[in-house]
Image 1 (cartoon, rainbow, N blue to C red):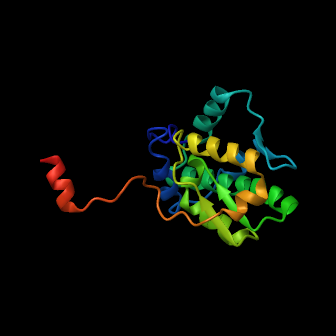
Image 2: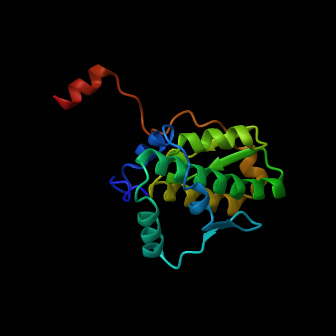
Amino acid sequence: MTEALGFTPLRHEGKLTGLAAYGEPVLADKIAAHFSVDDSGRVSSNFCDYPEMEKFIHAIVKGVSREDASASIQEALERTMLRSITRPLKRTKARHLGLAGGIFANVKLNRLLAEKLPIDEIFVFPAMGDEGMTAGGALCYLLQRDGLAHWLSQRRRLQDVYFGRDYTNRETHDLLR
């Protein structure tokens, strides 16, 4: 959708989120009809491949404003993700939700999930690109090695995402001189 509306893919998706507030989701049903959610919460589409989906998106946005197309993809995303995340939450009765990946840079989606899901807490891992894979791999290893009970007993609030010590302005100035 980002490309179909004339923006740069993997860079300007946030523009669609912003534009969605000014449009009507006139294409949402047509878009959402191509996506399904199984009992485990896994999302799949009936497109054979990415080029087929791309062709579909480019075709349906013809004659539709950027705002309406943005509102449509936002609505389809929200419906699909709400169904997807609801399924495992019902099964596990979890009250804390951790999310990762670029799709969760969508603040409007996250707000909807926080408001509509039966959860006490939502956490979006800040490294939303491939850089998050290393943290995920390490956490997966620790979970397998130590077990869930130990892992949960060691849980604490993440204060920031920076490593290393803090520098004062003077230290930074002296270092860069």
